[in-house]
Image (cartoon, rainbow, N blue to C red):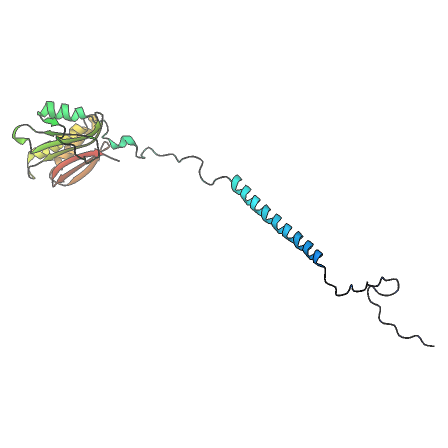
Length: 222
């Protein structure tokens, strides 16, 4: 009597293998298992987000700021408050010593408050004696006795009048009266350039001569 043919032996089959339980093949997982898997996935995602946020916050709080730790130093030429004033010039030197005592000018504050060119809070205008009162004038703008911002001399005569050259030269000389080494240089420059629009800087003072209106102005070099 012959033995009937047997089916091929596969993995997990054959003698001694535990047969699959009824219904195991093709069965979907139950609702409870699905809920458990979803809960685990959500927990992992939330933990990852929390870690990223806390790590980012910690990085923000502990990161040192970028930039210099101190203000940069400034050079000697950097403008300061003292650079707004004519170096070494005093109101008394211009008004009292030069104009009143030496040239008999009259110096008074303005009759009405007026805005100054240099924004200085105080102002004096000095006028020549006699018939030259309205032809030769000198203006002084200042904060106080030792802080002068501007000195300006005006001459109403036409170009060619020697009186204008003399006024401009003595104005430059008076502004630099405290600097003996430079005052003669300022005097010579103003006298030589009295008939032209000219600008120069001497001893920290900027001198400007204008033909219209005829004037010389001294302001600090900023």
